[in-house]
Image (tube, rainbow, N blue to C red; front, side, top):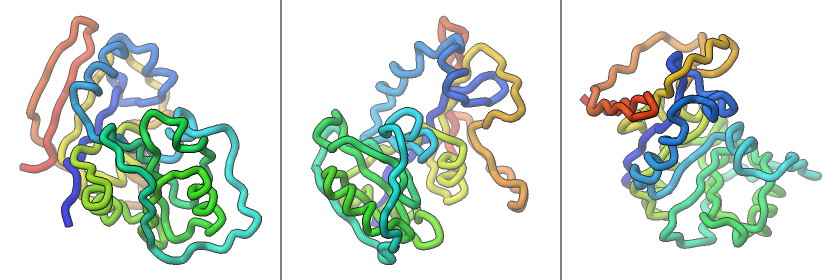
Length: 228
């Protein structure tokens, strides 16, 4: 099995913070979406927190019967030449419109802890899904399925320190691209691009600088590869 070429692409302040409300006020935010288009991702993936803020409907799915599906499965509802909006939602909590109402089909990545009811809900909304992993979502297996079943060749990770770190620690990232806006956040409680738990063994992930570009806005693009 193969996997997509996977890029983590984020806009940050000088001090590496990625709070959405803050980044929208950074000098250079106007460069974010043109660059996203240039990167030509087949599909993009967000974590649950980012998706709840930016993509999903208000509220939370409440199952009347919480019986877990208990097995891995794949449901492909749409072939998309425009790619997919991929969301990692391990336990199945986000609410969605019918998939026909979106420009780009949704693809939900979840675990076997998801309720049968939630998968039935996704079926009703005509939304594709991958169920992989038991204790948590198996993003390695899900990435292979994204390539082999959904035809995704270039995948952009565009949201959230948890999902960014999960792909990094799983060895799935091929490159990291940061658009550093010309401003400082400074709030210690707000998340950085990657955020490992303190309980994990400390290990620096070394990168190789591939490109630096300055924009008229004073934002700077930094492109690093993860493979030496």
